[in-house]
Image (cartoon, rainbow, N blue to C red):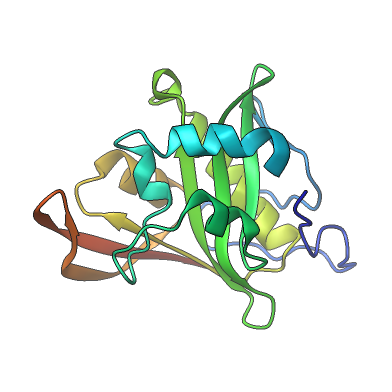
Length: 193
């Protein structure tokens, strides 16, 4: 399994994030009112992740907005700079959250979230999972900056991000070619004060 560095290693009180000030979490599993986030288990969860990213919406979980190329599930899971959690609802895995390119030195990472089971989307589960994961990033990993990239057309995702305190940092015009069409990408960030 993948080791998540930093959990429970820091003795000082957690920093507060700007915006909605998510509660700090210092160890997995993260338990919310609807979902739990547990450590990603490569043995049992990899097949689920591979199925989820085949979905038209799920494929964006692997897409690098920097290069326009998609990571493979293996690259995502095996990179030591990527930290992954599995979202569980009523004892069933339904998706993943991740910090990509986690930098312990710079105290920053890129947030990814995916409700992989289509029938579970639109129920507020992604918001709660992201809130728990942001709290974990701040409380356990000591992140000072969490950023993400989203397509300008993913309104529901943008609304979740804004509700969590993420702010627009920039618009990358015609950044990605997807299915023969160029799309704008929004860069959003959450800074810890």
